[in-house]
Image 1: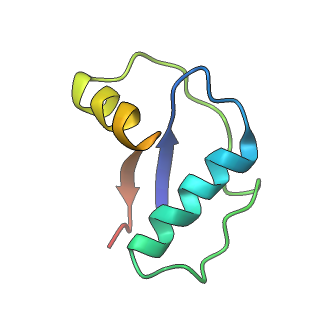
Image 2: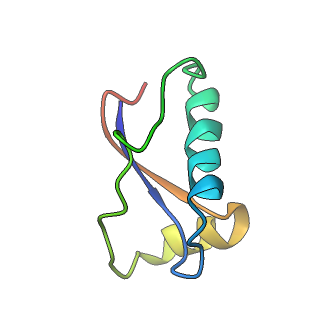
Length: 70
């Protein structure tokens, strides 16, 4: 699975961000899939669309699904 975890610029705690990724994997029935620093890189900085912002406000994060997200 290839996805980005989008958070507010204030959220800089990797443990919290990884927990969001694990929560997403669990929601897709993929809780046994590994999520490590090899798979996760803090590489995008941009202004998100309003619907992403609303989800970040509501849940703390937004998942941008890119490849093989069931």
